[in-house]
Image 1: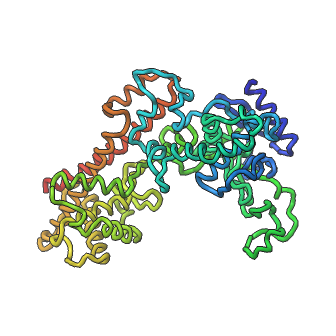
Image 2: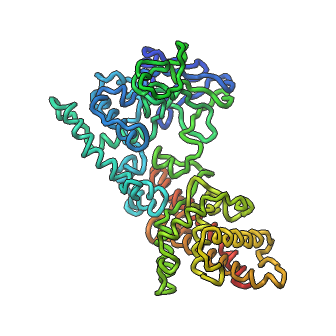
Image 3: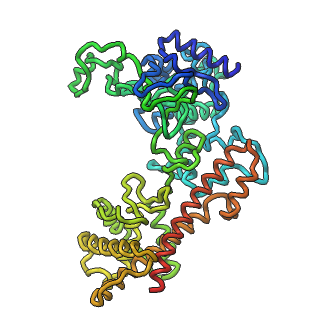
Length: 521
C-alpha cells in the first residue's frame, strides 16, 4: 500500500467516525510519514482545526483486550500498557475497529536509539561502528541504559514487561492461533509508536493514540495544540455527573448536559498559520535533543533546552576518586559522613538563593538538579555541592566549629558574594578589598579556586568518556562531515556527543579562567 493510499483510507475512516477537519488544512503523505499543511489561505489564531471524537482514540480502555491489561494511569507503566494494547490491534488487522487508522502508522521500526541495535533504518559500515557507540557517556545513554528510580534501565524494563506481562496476555488472546503472537520486535514497534505519537487526553482514557492529532509534526514554535477536558469520570468517561460520583470523591464536573463539543478533543491554533505551509504541533516545549531523540527519533539544530545532568551518586563517586588521588587519608567521614553531607546539602539547596541570578557562571534551576544548561552555565545545585564540599574540607580555617546549617549558609553566601564580585571584574582579577578584609578574603579565594578546579576536572572527566572511545572532540566534526547521508542514526548520535562535548568545553574554559585568575593572586 502506498503512503497516499494509506492517507486516503485514514481520511475515509475519520469521516465514518465523525471527525471534523477544517477545509483550510490538508492531511498529506509527507517525506517522513503523514503531515498536515495549510491550503492557500491564512488561518488566524484560536481556530479549531480538527475535532476528534473521544470514542475514536485508541487507549487501553477502548482496546479489544481492555480487561486483560494491568492498568497504569501515567508514566512508563502507561506507555507499556498502551503498547500491549496497540500490539494486539496491529496483529488482528482488519478485525480491529482501528484498522484503517493503524495502516497510516509507520510500518518500519521507528529509528529511535532503543532499536538501533536491531539495525532499524541504519546501513552498516564497519569503519563507523554501531550508532550506539557514539552515544557513550551522553544524556541519551543515561536515559536508555542507566538504572532509574526502580533500579531498572529503560531497555531492561521494556524487555521485562514483554516477558513477564505481555506474553501471558498474548497466550490468552491468541490461544487458538499462537502463530499470531507478536514477537519482541513487534512489541518494540508498538512501544516506539506509543513513545513517539501518544497523548495524555483525560482521566478516563489516560494515554492514548489520537488519530489526526498525531499527524502534526513537531516544532518548538508550534502552530497548534490539543485541547481536552481532563476531569472526566475515570470509570465511564462521562463529562457530567454520573452514578460513579456517589463514591463521595470530589469531581469538578458539570451537572448540566454538555453541548456537542464535550464529545470531542480539539486541535486549536495558538498562532496564525500562513498559507501553503506545514502546520506543526509540539511534543513538548521544553524537550531537549536527548529527549527528542530517545522518544521520537530526531534532533533539532540548536536546541536551547539541551542540558547535561549528574546524579548525587555520580558526583559522590567523582569526589571520592578526586580527593583520594591527592590524599590517601581522605574519606567522607572526615567531613561528617556522606549521609550528613547529603542531608545538609538538600536542606541548603532548598533555600531561595536569589543572588545566583547575578552570576554569569551559575543559574537557579529547580528542574534539572545537578546540571549544565545549553549556555554552559552550571545549576545552583551543582555549585552548592562543590562549594559546600570544599568549605567542609577546609575545616576551621574557613568556618566556625559549629557545623549547623545556618553557619554553612552564611559561609556559602559569603563565598558566593566573593565570586560575584570577582565575576564583575572585566579582566577577572581578584576583587580589591580593604586591608583589614584581606585576611578574610583569602579563605574565600581558596574555596573558589578549588571549586573551579573541581568543576574543570568534572567536565574533563565526562568529556573524555562522551562519544566513541578513542575519538577526540576535534575528530567528531570530521567524522560527521564524512558520514553518508543515509546514516541518520549515526549522524544524530555524533551530533549529540559533539554538542555535549562543546558544552563541557565551554564550561571548562569559563572556570579555568577563574582558576587561572585566583591561582596567580
